[in-house]
Length: 224
Ligand code: SF4
Image (cartoon, rainbow, N blue to C red; front, side, top):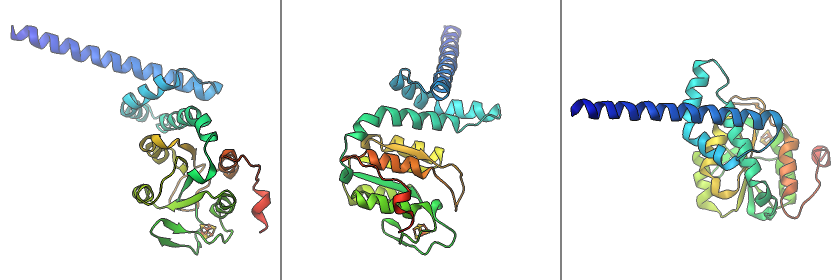
């Protein structure tokens, strides 16, 4: 009798492992297809399996010495696409932008306040340009040193959508926890603790899409 129970448990464990491996395989193939072909196939199912198999895919990727941030990038791209329409139908004043502290210049004169870094738009880094354009549309910009500041923002004000910039790992985690706020994410081009970079045009493009739609460009604010 005992043997039968152990055999059954063993079979269930093997079945679960096979299902997990199959899910990881399907998720990776669909995710790579999405990234390479720029297509969207079963996005909600893919997001679900990505969340379910996230840790396993990461561990296997590290074991095979592959880029384990691939799973974060796929997840960010999926959420961006799934939220695109709703985001573009959101009024600018209902949108906030959350930028990482590490984008600032090494000689940044800004001080840290309750809502993050208080940028004075000195022009030494891309945050200044993003802030100038956001002000034209009444979009609040928060420059935060860590995800704990996002909790402060949530307590401070109401918003319907968020544009987030961060490294792929942090951005994916933040977009997952803020999934009720129609997040749109732009991941950093270079990582690190200071002087990181982002595709500013990509951020401006998202700002322009908030209602009323606008056509601002980086050149409109560079010389101010
Ligand atoms: S633009 Fe703002 S964040 Fe960037 S260095 Fe100047 S004060 Fe700091």
